[in-house]
Amino acid sequence: MLVIFLAQIPLVAYARVLRKWARTAKMGVLFAVFIAVTNFFFGMGPEHSVAMALRFMALLTTSSFFFLTTSPDDFGLALEQMGVPYSVCFVFTAALRFVPVMAREIRSIMDAQMSRGLELQRGNFIKRAKNFIPILIPLFITAIRRSIEIAEAMESRAFGYRKRRTFYKTLKWRWKDSFIVCVSAFLFVIFLFYSQLF
Image 1 (cartoon, helix red, strand yellow):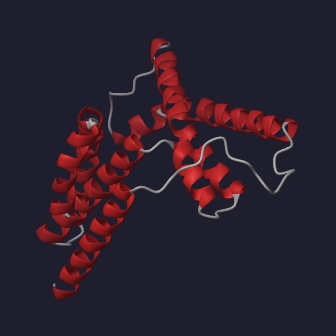
Image 2 (cartoon, rainbow, N blue to C red; image 1 turned 90 degrees about the horizontal axis):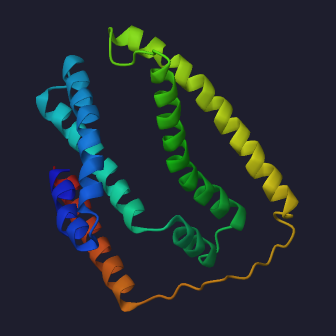
């Protein structure tokens, strides 16, 4: 897990997203520590606890690296050209686009509630959890309202009327793609063989 985590650093530096990737990793450290402490508390042992925390960090940072370097539109287009049904691709890309929108909504709601005197950083864990209820209720209402607007927009544009679709942009397979696929497959076989040994 540590090798997977550290192997991303040169790739992230080459992609020029090191600062954003490091911000995501910094946010995940608190959850990783929580996972390690929880596993150790339930008697999993120090090695297993650290391994679970590293597994979480590797999963978080690799997914962050993927989405920092891959546009949702390009990813959805690649899935379509691979033969995945358009409805599945649309749901996937819409969900990816929905995440940053909801993050902005959460920040706006938190700022509005804190300006009204809501305390989010004081008290014990149970009190803090109760203080998040005035944030979650408006967030759910906003999410439902936004999903209804998206559904109405899809209906007004006759979503799914034509089964055969045309593409504004066509993705082309290059030698770099073949190289990355070969390297990834090679590393996957090595890690699989290593995991079988231990």
